[in-house]
Length: 288
Image (cartoon, rainbow, N blue to C red):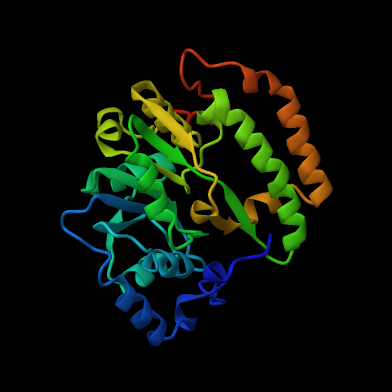
């Protein structure tokens, strides 16, 4: 799969805040004019930690959202120490500072600030197609749907080619679709996730874990109604491939994940009756 033009247009090659010309900010602000409403149907909440290199791409893609209902865009700066906040200060979006580090704390701060009936979750290192918000909300408005989530593609960073990443995505999509039948909480990612705000506020985001807060939130939605995997290209998120680089070569990366999936193959066919179970290694240890 090639990178679509509506994604490539936002893939700026600025590495630092100082490299960004004012004209880029002006263009983004002009497109953001109709993206902030005091009475939104949906709140788009993006979290960021040290995303000076990527957040402008993300901002530009969210400014290009095509919707026929009111929305608001909120960014949560999770106590970044780079120029993330300086970039946010130059654009017409609401930003919130959360000094407690962790995705759970950041997403909760965004939830607290949001006004919409629906929360559309986003990550600042990702680029979103123009109908991302519209596609998620359209599905959330279906009867008894409480949560929706989508698929991911990866942007090449020079270490792996787009062909290699597409091959990996092919197998990853199969795994996600299989696991979505009985264990959707194990496949959802916070960068592509929409849900009913009222339920989220009742349960809150998990802040005591390093990862898995998105799965816990989806499990909350599943208790109240149905959750849905959206496979449309209109909702497919494009994100950085840096998390894949830690595993070395493409062959090694695929083998690590194949072995991992084989070990938990039984999860594809069983429903976790006790809800989302957090692994011990994901829990934040209390300091003594």
